[in-house]
Length: 233
Image: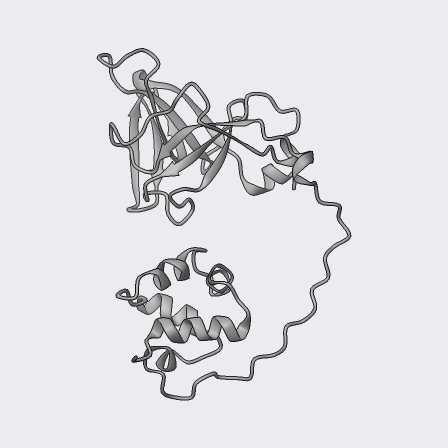
């Protein structure tokens, strides 16, 4: 079987003892770049991805593409010992599984893409910094318009009582329509830009766009917590 660029990437990951996610982050790419590339053998990396990936895997771009040229640009250094900081991490039993998952928040703002439920569809662990915080809930991201900040299936934690500032990720809860049954709500995720007398404006990443949601359709908008806020950093 002819060796492909996917085979060469996997070989370098094996030699360097890197996961696809770790290699992607080392290259300065989004965390799922390599996972998605390796899952589709018909897909080739873009020039930008290739330029970032080659030094991270310590090979030349030519070698990645063809298997020829100089190969690994330098010997792989043995991994340095990483010592874990003397921090007592909470166990699962110390983190109650009591944060409700209320459905999905769509990466795009199109009617019918999803619904937000009033009843929990699941419960997830409460991060340490949220112990005692009231009314926290979580959602799974749906769609791709917030990539690479949020990927489809990512779990986000939402704080309904923490004010959002410009640039913060927010979940906007909207009424679907007057003809729909009471309690039927949709939610979309985006970056808070501003609110005017007529509408709330949020920003999407993919493709870049500003979305205007009329005030009369909005039930609420809540801040999505960052990793620092989840762990009290």
